Amino acid sequence: MKKKHYFLIALITLSAILFNSQRQNKNRGCVISDIILMNIECLSTPELPKVDCWYYGSIDCPGTNIKVLYYS
Image (cartoon, rainbow, N blue to C red; front, side, top):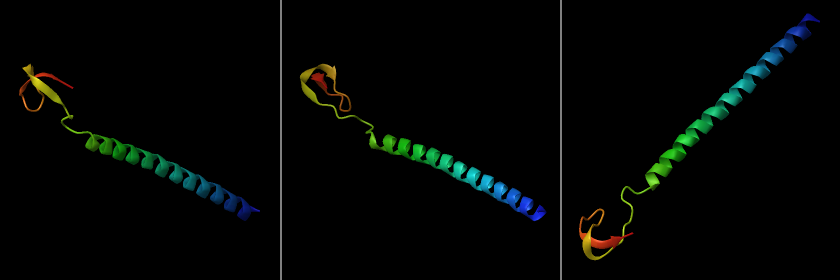
């Protein structure tokens, strides 16, 4: 009877350890994937946005500093 109790306690302990290990790996994976996604998003945005400048005027065109009438 004592062997069954020891076996049952060992089985419960092993199950708890495995469950906790799986949960920690799952949480760690989410953190890594969030960091990777933020890095990809950061790398995919251009440093200088595309700006179209039209005509000659008194406003500086971003990036070229040429005087233009307006830009978008």
